[in-house]
Amino acid sequence: MKKKKREYLSSELVKSFARIHGFEDKLVAFEIKDFLEEYLDESLFSEIRSVNIENKCIIIKIISPLLKNDFKMRRSFYLKKFQDKFGEEKFNDLQIL
Image (tube, rainbow, N blue to C red; front, side):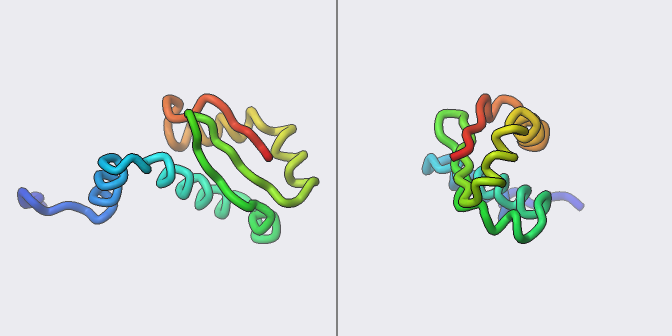
């Protein structure tokens, strides 16, 4: 099936709009949060307050001290998982707050 000249997928339009207006990182942060929702069980995921990206650094704010400690101990594991899924060039660090 051939695409017409002006036929786009809605996801392509959203990504293009985000790139133009400079909040592409926020879209990737939402994708990371969706990934964590699938990866963690519901009770653990509910402890994650927010996910943001600033200067190629993923910042995850976690409510639970136990989950926060687990993420800190496995920081390189999670960073590698995010880089594999979303691209190594997008992130170079992971902070757990």
